[in-house]
Length: 238
Image (cartoon, rainbow, N blue to C red; front, side):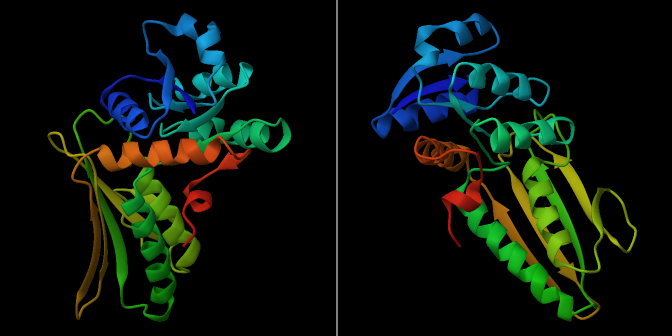
């Protein structure tokens, strides 16, 4: 498979290594200093572009790739509120393809399934209040993390007594999320259910970014054969 990389930071370099190890070809690498390469024949030849950049440029990168007929796998977060409707329309009505995930880790996919199931169970046990803490490296631009938002939205969907999530909010009907930025932490997400009698905690603690990079390449392999707006729910069947 021919892969283009959009964004060539730590994640981009790790994705490149894993993709090459799995027998794929990197045909184009686009970063902030060579945006003109979106117009290159090399980029247009890609089966899939894997995009890890920043919230304020991600959507424009999607448009540029789509204009060249290139499918996208993206782990960029922070753009959904402003451009989510546009992306859904492009994928459902205009034939574009985006595989988007706030986190590509296989472990996080498993953790997310457990999170949803536990929230559903907790409808029977009103004595437990739920909160979340997400911890990331100091370079992360958005808060809460995209993964925390995805986990929180699943809890709100399943747990009747929580109507929405809120950063540092304490209302009874709000799922509180706290964010911590510390050193070079790849990502820790902890969800707690606390009652007067006991505390239940589930945590996903990433040892490195390698799991995210492998998941992105697996997503690219899947996206090459599928169309539309794709997520880890399509890739991992739990």
